[in-house]
Image (tube, rainbow, N blue to C red; front, side, top):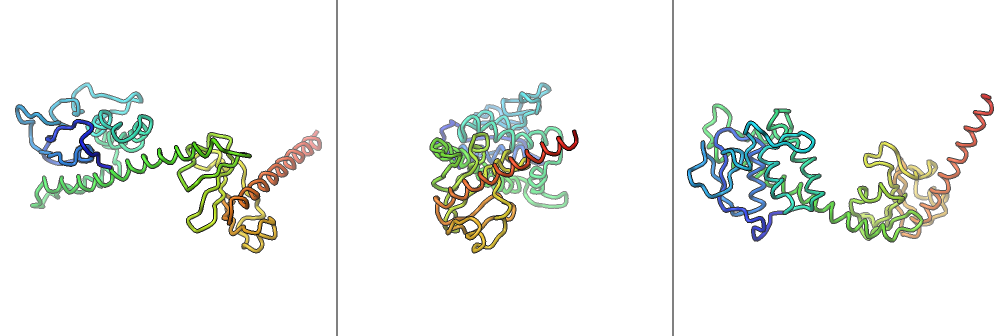
Length: 300
C-alpha cells in the first residue's frame, strides 16, 4: 500500500542509529518506505550536523522516544519511534478510527516491547535479522533485509485493515435494506463488525463454492456468547437428502455440525431456512419458559 506522489511530504533522506537494530527502528524505516518509496535511510552514531531529512529513534527530535519525559498514549502506553511516526502519518493510509485501531492492535504492542522488553514475538523475530556475535555479515545489509521483510508485513497488515473498512461500507449499504432481520450481501465482505451490534440475525451472501451461504449473526465478536438465532439441532451435520426432507427446501446442500451456517442454492431458499430457524428457536424458548414455570410451581 505504498503511497504515490509523496502526499505526506516526507523528505527524501532519513537517519536512524547504527548498531543493533530492533523492531522499532526497522518498522519505522518500513513505514517511511511506504510513505515515500524512494527515501534513502542512513544509519550512524549521531545525526550529521545540518542534516535536513527526517530523523527517527535517535537525536531527540519529534520521532525519538529516549528523552526523560517520554510521550505516552492516553492509556499510559509509551510511544516508541514507530508509534510517533504512525501518529504523524497513519491517517495517510487509513481513516482516523481505523488508524487508531491499527495503533492499538499492531503498533502499540511493539512500542511497549521496545520500551519495556515484553518479549513480543514479532519483535523477537525481527531481532533475529541482526548479525550474530561471530558473524562478519554487514550490519547495514542485515538492517536492509529486516526492513524489506517488515515493509511487506506492514503493507499487508495496513491493506487488510483498509479492506475491512471497504467491506464495512458494503455491509452498511446492505444493512440499510435489511428485511425480517436478514441481510443479503452482494458478495462476501467482513460483515461482523457492522452486523453484530444491530438487529440482524442472519446474513446471506454468494458462496465461493457456488450457491449461497446462510450464516447466523453471533451475539458477540468472538462468538463465545453464541448466535442470536441458531440453526436447529435437527439440521446439523445431516446429509443433503435428509436436509431436504426435514426442511422442505429443495436446494439446501449442507448444514454445519456446529449450527452456524447452511449452504443453499438460492437466496429464496436461504430466506426460508432463516424463517424456519427463527420459528424453531421461538418454540424452543417458549418450551423452556414453560418448563421453568412448571419447575417453580413444583418447588413451591
